Length: 434
Image (cartoon, rainbow, N blue to C red):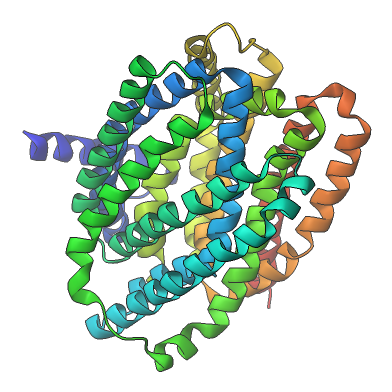
């Protein structure tokens, strides 16, 4: 039955592809959609449980505690970049590119050993610096320490997940994601029904518990591939690693600046409301992006003609623009109603997050394409280094006009994605005209 449904969907995809692009699908595209079906299966099932679990958290905690919950996630994202040190993206690239199984195992092992060393080191440093960090972002030391401890567990899970993706074990990955989401939802539901204290800390437990189970399940598959640290493999990936680390730091700085800015200057309650609006769109769109990139990035590493891929992405996104904006806006309105009366409906915010979702999908595709080419990655990285200056200037304006509240932050977010689109287009034009 499943195979018949898959065949019918593949035939439908062939017709759509022919209508949009004017020619049939290539073998690479068929392979991509074949793997994608497993990713979508896992993502579709897991997103249902993640959706209801996340709504229960926001509804139970209310804007203020939900703001603290999301501040922990923001700080932990920064901590994870420091813990990863660029090894997460680098491992996927070199494992996907290599056809030598022993080399693949060495790339994987190098990344894992690096995290084992960096993780505890970063946690120890957080004990020393938590007071300083808490003053900068206007929060308490306990929240900062919680975020760093939380980050280490999630970082290990995320790294192992990237290995599974790089080894193209999409079927196994999809089932693990379903198990992860089930554990998350059931734990959230238990806390929702049994816990009377509205404290953000308790609702970090579901993610931690689910992450530990995933680490165990992935560890069983990957343990046989573990090798000693290999200096030759490290030196081979060193140049790419440097660029990845720099880009990751800039990316996470920009990606968390919105929440840190809101927490410090607009208040923790506003952060809770802002997070609810973002979650109302990204709970589905974020999972969709994860499914697409899960298969897309490992596969395009082997494709030489990047220009053809980006042209295909552009055509597809133009067709998708109005339907996607309409779908996300409707979804966001529905989700915010589920959050409860504490979260007011603002149609400007809804339209803003809908546009952000569209831009997020487009820039994620662009980022995967540029990351798969060393020449493109270097050029976009050079331009990308100027982005923090651009974002800081925008946030200075946001601070000056902070009386307009979250509108200013949404505007900065949209400008940030537009900058990334321009960066990719400029890089492609520069390389193709040489």
